[in-house]
Length: 78
Length: 349
Image (cartoon, rainbow over all chains, first blue to last red; front, side, top):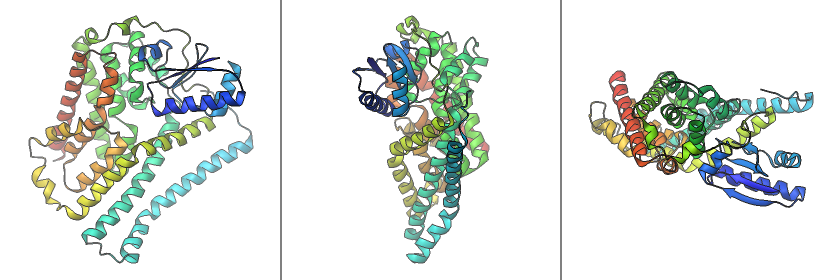
């Protein structure tokens, strides 16, 4: 699983990353994390409101920080 | 908007909890003034007319009052705005011409959930969807300038008149500034890569499919996030207010910064532009300065210059805008704010 956290490094981006890490360790799957801070690349995913969560090049979340449980559910579906 | 039908029990817990919280909020708001009267004047035995007594009373009462207003306003606004999204705003603005587009963009800038840390992806998203630069700029100016938290605080602290003036002024600045930037053919000052950005994949609406529980959780988290960010500003603002309240003679400011002072507004904006805080952080200071006799126009200009023009946002926007456009942006908005300050001082005098 390739996970990208999109955002310029604001508080919400850090929280999204932390919760995604938690969800990943609860699910017990392998994942590569990558932080994307370049605005052009963020925009190219069609995201207009950070933070964004991209898994295997698909946008799962944009503009909000879901709960760890919701992230876990989204990751299982992905 | 899909609202999931929840089973009766969690629904009861959710709305019951929310109702209790609202009740606690109202009780605290009502007992705030009697409590500080009792504590400072009866228990401590301080004289209400003494500098120390009135300052301590001001500090305690204002801290609780502004804290409560912020918690209530941020929560309600966040929950309401979870029904709006920037993706929908962009769809509404698509294909609008300048003029009508500027007006709509400014209005949508007020109600769309948006943080200036997303200014760059939003800018690229708007421009690559064919929305004119001037219309995009109207949105980006209105969004921080006419801030819903500032609206709530102004309403709670100054009443409906100054609040309406603030909203009307902020919208006018955003509409006119965006239109002027469009007339200047600002697109030549946008970094070329913006026009070459291709969007891949499907677009995810950032607030689609949320349940009521999600929206309430978002509201709670937003309250915590904003308060954690601004509490030092609150303490400093209210602390300065308390000192002004107790020790600075009321005619001090009115002598040096009254509405007739031709430089008052320009100085206020000059001080405000390099300062950066959000509306919630700067409002307590504005209230104390108003109490000390500074004119409302000067104060609104000060507040607007603090929230609308910020160095961090300019540095972010530099990635997509050339220095000429950044300079034009600052010049047009600052001019608008100064004009608003003078107009209000004239109208309200």
